[in-house]
Amino acid sequence: MGSSATRLYAVTVYLEDDDDMDDQPAEYAVVVSAHGVGAVRMRARSEVEAAAKAWVRLVGVAREKATLKLKAPHRVVAEQTSIRATAAQIEECDVWCGQLKLNNMVETWYFSVGPAEALRGEP
Image 1 (cartoon, rainbow, N blue to C red):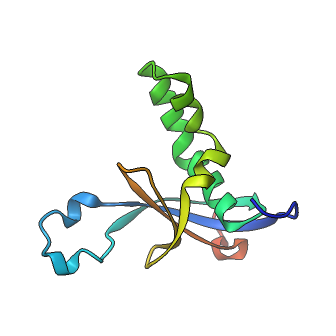
Image 2 (tube, one colour):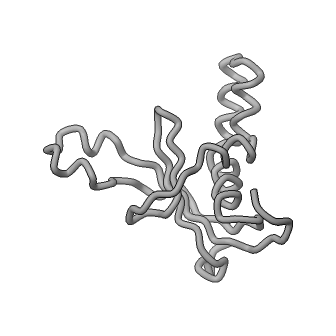
């Protein structure tokens, strides 16, 4: 995940709205329809690590609880809060809602990552 020096990043997480695109003509398939899930500041060694940490905080912790209730295998439960496993799935992209994405074959999450100053006034 890069060098040991850390920076403070502003990360906004978006979830793709797949249902919004179901009735659209094929020529609109390249348009991403997404909504914001949350924005946080993360200290990390890279943008990818910052995105992974943000996903775990905003999404993964709740998913861990849900998978525990479903009595999912330990490996599945643990992956919900694993920064390393999440970071390994993140790839670069170029869409209006971010430069990084996480596609788990069910959902697609986008991350806009930048300097922490971008979230002034946010908690």
